[in-house]
Image (cartoon, rainbow, N blue to C red):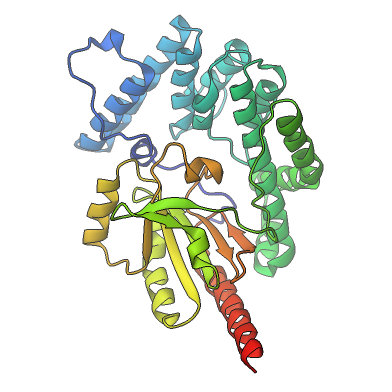
Length: 372
């Protein structure tokens, strides 16, 4: 069945993103566990479950624990527990755990301070109006500046994604044909996103203005056509790595993680692309958001990925600066360091290759004209 948007990742994949391999000290009573500790405990049980029935039961048990914790704790920890519930795949109808968690967030936590990074756990998808409205309320009514800033960044990112989707609909005849053929709920979802895109330019300006004027937060301009900001990371050997060192080459920046299935699915095609571009002004740079560098190192030992590998981690730094909220996230830069294309979903290998070939030819023709 045709789907316009990626479905929710399975729970084990989501949890890998929050360092699920970390363990609690084993000395705490269950009632003393924080939501994050419960979440990690849940992952371990889900990953070690003997079958799907056991996994489903673990998910149900911990969902109830998170909801119970939030009922007893109306502070930022209670809100965190509810955000974890919203990450769990499953039904979203009335009476579902997802609906209960969202309702409790709206009722008890729009003004809760210290949400900050916890708000980033909220899976605000283009096709879900309820979560978008919650973030809007938080951005408008929460008095904590960090929380406001995170909410506004989420809204900016979502508006940009809607605009990108609308541009794809306009330029991709096959996609437009599939949309025209869609029916029912799927058709309604597309209409919502296109309506959102229609207002996105105005919204983005308003959100950025509020960030800059009221909260004194300046965002990097990652728009297509703008110079790419500097990226400072480290390679797998721990040496400092800088994007500016690659100036003069067409660069693909691939923000990814080893736990991300669509990211791993790109590897065979990337292997072919980098082989095809050998000797040309081109660099493919994979920037890992794995929590531990050792996780990346082990993956590279077991998988042939003979191109530039950087590790950024999943906390502060380039991942946060570049507003990477989903994986894979691809930026393609021309030889002058200008952002020429952004791709925020997997499965677009042909689009990446086509853009790279065009920009490499531009770079080679430009170099040739200078020497003639």
